[in-house]
Each structure stands twice: as structure tokens, then as C-alpha cells.
Amino acid sequence: MKKLWVSICLIALVFALSAGALAVPSSVSYDTTRRFLEYCDENDIKYSYMGIDNDNDEKVNLSFDLTNTSVDVRYFFEEDQESCMVRVWNLITFDPDQIAEVRDAVGRANADYRWVKYYIDESDNTVTCAADIYFGGGDAGDICGYILRRVVNISDSVYDDYLGQYNQ
Image (cartoon, rainbow, N blue to C red):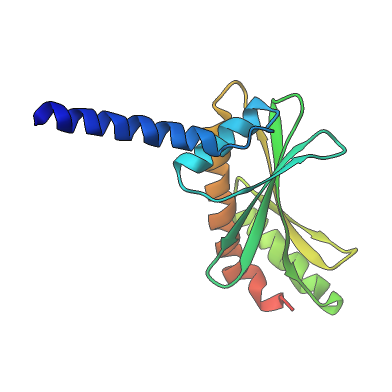
């Protein structure tokens, strides 16, 4: 009976490990992207693989509901596989008459937090969260996962403490 139980556990483990590996789309081109998607699968994080854009960046989108808003976190994995960009566009959309207040709030948020930076896009009166990642030979999956947690948690706090009051 003990051998049967051990066999069943081993089969379940092999199935679980192989099921996670099969979830990454076969069309993924860059190893850095693949490592991040494997990280997401291992941690039950849902994502949308978006393919390669005209700049040869491989894109992944992740959606999250924060305390008082929701965001899409977009990863752009670069062809050289040494780095990637992370962006959360449109964290807020604000009235152009409030540009001075929003600029002050963005400045305070940038002073209070590291890992991510916020900036104003005056062309559409929105605030964007940005992070740039250099892998430096490290595991792209773990590094991107760490930054994902930072982007989401800090954006949640920044929205609630600095910017949410200006969102239209």
C-alpha cells in the first residue's frame, strides 16, 4: 500500500510540474519572456501573451484589481534579452485644470517610493507608472515577479494615498 501511495504521489508531482510547463504559449520567442511566464504559472498569476510588436519587444499583459481601481501591467521584453520595460498606463485620468495638484502628488509619490516612478502624460491627462528592469545574468522570472509585486503594491498605495482623489 505504501508503494502505491508513493507512486501516486510521484505521478501527481510529474503531472503538476509538466502541466505548468505546458501553460506557456509555444509561440514565446525570448527566454526572458518564457522564464517570466513560467514564474506566473508557478504562482497562479493570470496573464495574456501578446506576441512581438513592431519594435521587436515581446509583450505580456497582466490585469489586477487594486483596492480602489484596476490596472493593466504591461511587460515589454527586449530582443537582446538583457532587460525589459514595465508600464501601467492610465493609472488615473485627471482634469487638465488640476495639473499642478497632480504634478505635486506625482512628485511626492516619486520621493516616497523606490523601484517604480510615476509621470504625467499631458497629451491625454493621465499618469503612468514605469519600471525598467536589467537582468544582469539573474533569473528573469524571479526578477520580473519581484518587480510585478512592487508595481502592483506601490501603485495600489499611490492611487489611494496620492492620486485617486484626482481620477475622473
